[in-house]
Image (cartoon, rainbow, N blue to C red; front, side, top):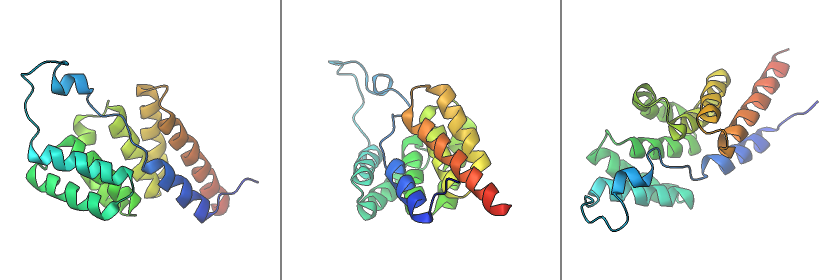
Length: 168
């Protein structure tokens, strides 16, 4: 029978949790068209969020946390900051905190691929495999070519099967 060790699961999760995901809102909708000078300048909280997200992608978790916490303090309603902080909390093994950050987003933006992907990752890390399957399934429905969602769905199904086998 196929069996994933704890080390295999941790390595797989760390590898795909830190992958960048598509923005929840296309850039064209947020910054105007090329050459459009009417775009608003970035707020400090947005700059902090972008820097934190970049630091998260290069695995500088301390630097990412500092920037994202400052961004969150300045603008706790920012969806992008909440998503980035949730990714960080999932990576640093605090999935409960990630789920707390995601709760308001899930209620207001359930049809956004990135939201479902990050939610699935946090649910999976928390051991809530059924909920993770739902989130990843929603993500695959929203973006049928989203490889990260299909990978998350597959890994979660394996973990769920493994948990069921261990319980027998």
